Length: 101
Image (cartoon, rainbow, N blue to C red; front, side, top):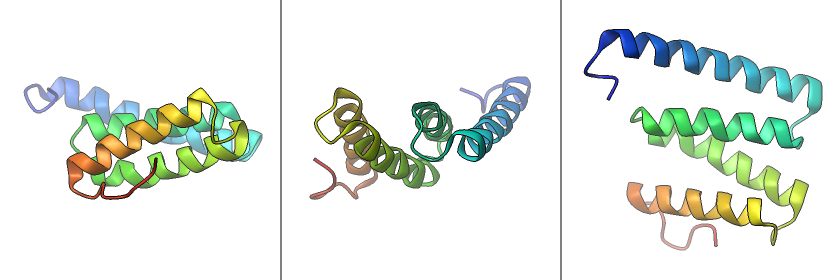
């Protein structure tokens, strides 16, 4: 875990910065519903979640899920996987009653 080693934490900070830049670039150049934008959004949210910032990740996961539904349709495997991931996270945070699925 990054709390153990300050050097690793520096890499996480840099990774977050790069992921935020990538997401901003994708949104600007490709639009909010492009698959690459949705992937960049999921990647940033996943990093935040893995670093103990799950509550900060939720809005990104929600936006990514909405984008998947609009881009692929609600029955697409990508959309369903995103919904399951968000639901598990919300349940872990105690917010999952009746959410998503």
